[in-house]
Length: 183
Image (cartoon, rainbow, N blue to C red; front, side):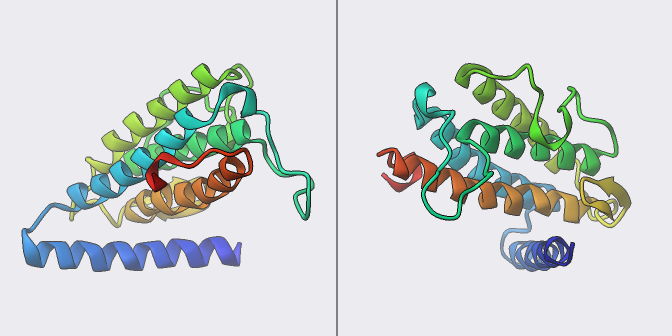
């Protein structure tokens, strides 16, 4: 829990810094700042999910200290589920679909289904980011990590996604796939 709290506080601090720096330049809105972060994450994550061959979606490393880790498919589903859950917290509502918790729905199995689920999560995430305002950013909400603020839940979408993106990159490279963002 301490690591999660530290990440949330760090993400919040970075977000506030970025938001204040952005306002000083061209004065984008808070929603625009967070939506831009989500767009960057979405570009990298969706690109990698699409680049990984369907027959490698069941891959999980076995050499070294990888006992019990998620498969590539499970990484993508988990990432997407947390985007849905955190975005729902930002909006103060339930996700538009049953996420099956943080691991994703059991019915979502094929690469095509998983990528569609991921894209749906990011679409919902954009709706959430665009709902942020100076007035509502510090409203208390129930997030996947417990009580939080809207803006901390929004920040979680980016840092959590990039955490799992890093793991997905390792899996892809272990299978000879160069992530599109690195090409």
